[in-house]
Image (cartoon, rainbow, N blue to C red; front, side, top):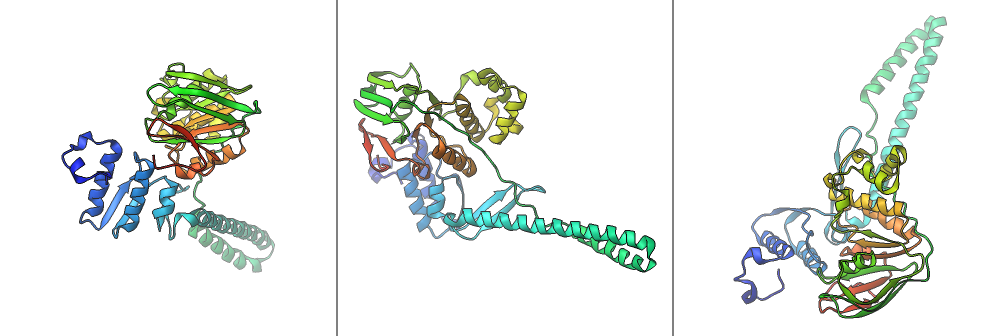
Length: 387
């Protein structure tokens, strides 16, 4: 599980292992245990990509029945052969079971929801038709006693139709609308020459151009986040060498930890007023697009990780940044929010650098800057996951 010999690790105490190593030991114990059914809650959390690949192989090879929760689309695609989706409905939450893998899940869910909508539409049409017939027969019965029996029969038919009730409504969809705009900058957006992040990297030079989509890859602790913070204007990042931003480049930084001391004790409405002078109406409107309208009066520190992530993206939109510096932006996002962000980035008129371990998210990038474990920083034509 740890990729080392028994002699190297047999005497190590568990509390000396990293979070990822501890998780791998626990997973291996479960997979090798006598239990026939395993329930795993986000088993891929805290695992780097090589460890996630190890997990995928272990799960595929296991003969156990395994129920696992995950938002990692690559893991879902590689491992799951049935998918349970918890759905929020008008009359309560439900669960839908898709009898196949992730590759067909989107289309199957779309078709299912369309069927629900069609059945509900037909029921509403029939309901209106029956009500109109009752009204017509009632008027006719006033002047023709012969129509009275037909009127009563139609009333009974309408009552029974309404007692059965409508078919289930389509499940409520999370509809996050990300509106990143960007803007035209100089052709050279970032230039570095013999840049050194002290204690983390050897000298490296790079040019990044307008419109580039650059995935920043590498093991934790190799300087990726420091690089983004430096580009975002953080003067506390110790470095040497030269770097500069191009003309009309305005960086916007998405922090992995969501650490914003300036937001402490403030509600979302207060932050939007203080940072962007948004009054109540426009503020609630933009919060609604990010499915945060119910959290308008809530303090930033009390939001879930996913809600904080969506709010950070909202702030980037309002800033109008022409260079996005995204540090693990999909870490806390659910599938719908991650896909909304990806769609927005394809339409974004600017330059994007994103630190990520999300293999699915990385498919939307065309350049790959790798921070190696040997302090080397280099560009690769393809994603590099073995550090």
